[in-house]
Length: 400
Length: 114
Image (cartoon, rainbow over the protein chains, first blue to last red):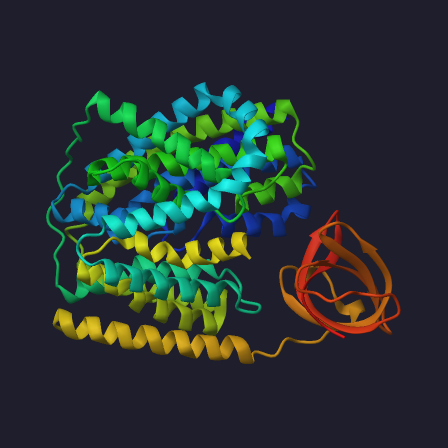
């Protein structure tokens, strides 16, 4: 058994890397696939080994996901908000530095999260009922603050927020649409950025391996905010890293691009680890991976909880190292490839995947979301406003 | 394409797309199933079922009821807000998502027509 667990980690790392590099393949897709064949797998292994495997895949994936986000502009839900800032770094020839920033943010948040795990578990137990009542007002406040901060054009920001919100409501309530978030997010955050950069004929310059200069003061402010906002949302239904990023950017005023990337990295990792805590403490599954695990294991015990936390940490370390390595490969070859051709083939691939996974209606959603996503990209206003696509449905869900 | 044109084009396509999707989403007919045909493959899908209510349990926030047609029985759960009173032996048509609860399939009701 111990041997099987140890073996499932490297295999999980491999799958995490593959699913991370390929744009459009979310760990949820992998988990769903694995659960479908789990009766077969369970004939020669135990649920716990399978759960460790799933955990590893998902953890590594959250790290490696940053590579396609940065170099190809093809994000998934979690990395969506980081695409534009990363793209900015990429155009300066510092794509690798952007990746390093998210990795550094992730690692520090994980360390702080691990140190605080016992207080977090206890606080969660006590404040969960209260938190449930106020979180929605906190979110509304954050959204208002984000509008206020948008000096470029508040009206346009509100329009973008409302348009994407409307699309979010339609998409999430669309009858029998498989994986509705996939076309929604690919369009809003991914393809729209790619279309704009195709249109502006931007060329990817030669990439240099540069290292970010981070002051310890920055780490000391960003890390607690990431852990706090990531932790806040990880326990609540329908909220995820994107909402945490919105709360986080509202908490830290004048957030630089550099610090924003660190925060996104931190929030993503902490959110994932804390979702185990939610499962353990309040017995609620908060993302696809955790749903998978909770279907495999009825209720997790303290020992299993500790096991999963350790697996997360090991996988995070391995994920960080692989991400840095993969990013270097991307950095080396990205200027050599024909960028236009590359972008066009990624767009076609995502469109094809949407057609296969979500069908024709998903494709319509992809087109609409792409053009909504183009608006803020063109007008240089924050892409965070596109999160209206989730915020408005979430706010309605809580208020109605 | 210059930026202003692309901007206008984006606005137009966004609005058209939204209207189109709204229209389609409203007009999609949800497929009706015999209860015996509801299986794991339909998990997370929205289905329509009609039959007679054979049992109703009330909790503070929920109705839990069994619905029976010629082919079988299935449990359904409905949040109380928005739904009228449910009574035993009533003929209803329900629309809802198939979910799994404690290894059994249930319908999470989205709409009830009595």
